[in-house]
Length: 197
Image (cartoon, rainbow, N blue to C red; front, top):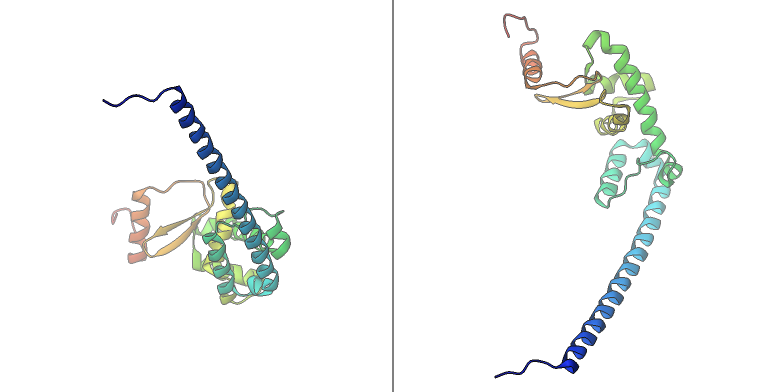
């Protein structure tokens, strides 16, 4: 029959547990310090990259999209704040906020004609006319990012998919499946009547 440990055995076991806990805390602290150092290095290198390619990021829509995708993969949002380091470094926040204001202007101006739903391509064309730029200088991704920043204004601006088209909704009304079905049918038929529906 095996004997149970005595007081000395329990004290040794407690001391061993304390030593393991201290070693574990030290390892965790070292890992945390290493991660902080790596993040600081990464941020510095990312800022240096952004500073070096600032003009490409601002002027080349494909490069800008790839830069945003790279930032998203590492959990950095250069649009998170208009007053942050990224806004000062790149002026990117200003670009999207300015674009957002122009989107609001166009949506409000065209609302009597389209009922608050405008095709994303039509919106891009009107934005390019307003900005006096060619269509290639402004991507759908740029418009989508600017519209996502407009969500702070409430439920008035969002992008919805109807069939193969993306529409920008600028009225604070939710569209249900019936509305979407009618819009898809209107795309195919080009005209609808109450009796047809």
